[in-house]
Image 1 (cartoon, rainbow, N blue to C red):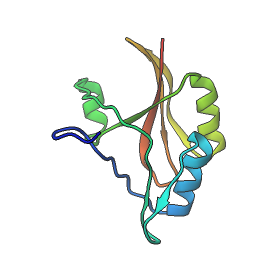
Image 2 (spheres, rainbow, N blue to C red):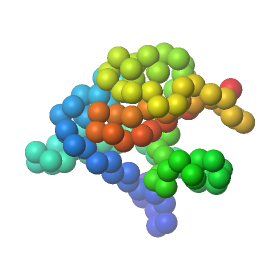
Image 3 (cartoon, one colour):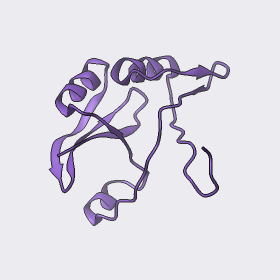
Length: 115
């Protein structure tokens, strides 16, 4: 349900829309609704947070979208097989483990697993 003040939508740039859609479909099973030749929408759920780690702030000033995986190693393999580039290998942090990747359009995201 949509509510005032809640994050409702995340939009990524896509230099090559067909390649970007193919990547997310292959790696994560996403489906899309096309709105003309230059826009595709996905409906995949959303939670969020803020990272105040000074080391992370020095690297980038853009939001980081984090996806979930039950099996982090299997998801890393799917991302790589779909054409993603791992930018930060799997690492542990309080509450879980994650890795970062770039999609075919250069957007950086992360994948998280509990424990």
